[in-house]
Length: 265
Image (tube, rainbow, N blue to C red):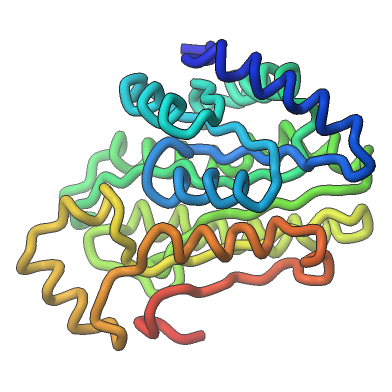
């Protein structure tokens, strides 16, 4: 579905964008993929609180998107990050509403957990396509505009399991590790154009993706976390805002690990 589910919200925000861009200090436009729940939603709200004009994309949960947009006033747009043309069309709609996108947070991700000897090709490709190829697609669509404007902030949400590995997640860990290598390489390519590219590797966070884990499994996981708790989405979002800031322009190509001490690099 390639349309915004909240046209009134998008129109109102576009009007605000036009007003803001008439000010002495132009407000930067930020786009968060997978931004209607969990870390993505917390990041979108934190970025707005920091003064950015924010839009979020989502895949297919229209009810959750409508609830998020109604609650926050942040416009929502639906497209498939695994499809390059869908990303191009979606980005065009966001930029028509808000203006050029200065900050991209690649947060969209899915899991299909199972051990490799039981994993289907579909489970492998779906996770790689959304989590890793989605990161490529979004960056590919936006990087030329950022280069032309000599400005950009890209934040890729990886995972502690992309650093340490995790049984039952060869697909997810491969995708998230790939994001880290992607981040370093694009950072090298883009640095001369005042574009920073960084990754965040959250540990286990109190979001819907983690809360479906069986209690006995979660108890075992928390035994390996020195802080003995899950992160909050707001804690991850604070770091997104930090990396998205203009003042963070000398920080690029890094992976910021936020995992309660579970994996130290």
